[in-house]
Image (cartoon, rainbow, N blue to C red; front, side, top):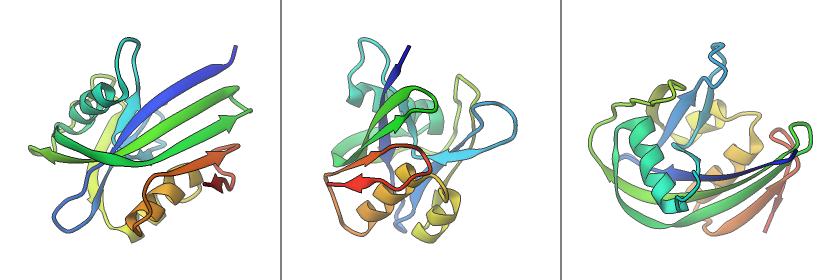
Length: 155
């Protein structure tokens, strides 16, 4: 059976313009994958409600305001037989970093420069390309990928 995932993620920036990434160890095997804070929208929840909840769980920060839609990505992963539709929103926040992920997957949360982001997200083009484009000033784009490591199409 095909899995359909709807994901909401936040672009949170500090005063120096660095972006918050969280380190996920989903398989608890020590293989950390970096992402924007966010996660799957649960049944009965809107994307914006999920965004607020996930940011709080993964970082300890409180979303103060959701400013705008930054971009949308779609990943058709035939290998896993799943489709992921992820929306990234620029948001402002308050509080101090204090991750308390109830699932225990988040092992790190810190702010990175665009150069550091390029290294952390290397090989995960659907996570890397849209974020770097956004940081260069592009907003509201749609990105389509046929896998997590394959080049995509930008609209």
